[in-house]
Length: 350
Image 1 (cartoon, rainbow, N blue to C red):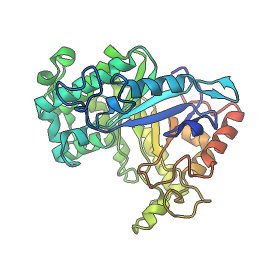
Image 2 (image 1 turned 180 degrees about the vertical axis):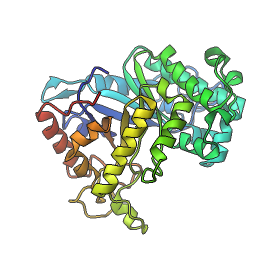
Image 3 (image 1 turned 45 degrees about the vertical axis):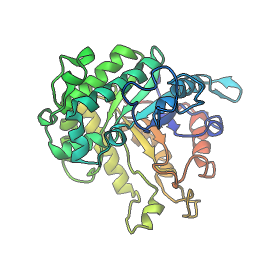
């Protein structure tokens, strides 16, 4: 997107976004897709939790996304225009399919009626974005569940051509065809947007996992995208301590994550984006919204290593409402970002 240094961003409120020279601001779309033949021109009572009406209901469908695009484009820092990249995480399969995580969610993509609604919703999002710039992140966790069903995504059935003959009649009726169709639609309807699938690092410390995930993601079609998204943890380490789980990064585990990311990037031929990074820090007190973690501090102390691992962006955010956020972290992320941008930044590794 025209950037030459490692990008820093977060899921954050307007005031936080203005508190430091952030590069990216992301939002989730996760409320459910539009019901068939409803909410076509106005946000009436039939819209339910559809993301297209997450705004003043007097506004036409899609205004929530348009506002995100316009707000980021108009961002300033110290009174000077400094546009941010609008990123969107599209996480709709689980809620919209009415299934549970895992095999039943994967099976939903072989339901032509449901998949048509899903493709229609994705098309509406892309048409709403139109010629504007954006980063699009497709379905965190889902592709990992596909891999659990079958490590060859070409063997997982999906009703692609029946559900979307308009855009993807040439794609295979498989999970790989589904993924490639999603990316192809971005090129068609939102040509200035960048797009990436999600690679789950659930077993990143295991020998050979990075290569195996890279092979799977390549077969899925991730190389047709612009980046691959990964997530180092969905909750703060201090919170996991209360569950009796050790999720802290050590120098060894952090280096293993970066090595995993680099192998994945090299295998797919695209950089990775580290997303939803926990915001806890050593000054927190391990209560709701103030959990400890060490990833913010570790990553900013090792930015050269991050870049060398072919990571293009660090995007921070709470994976649950009770976790530490950019608004409750004591201002650490903003201060780290200000310090980072006070220099020339860390060059992206080619």
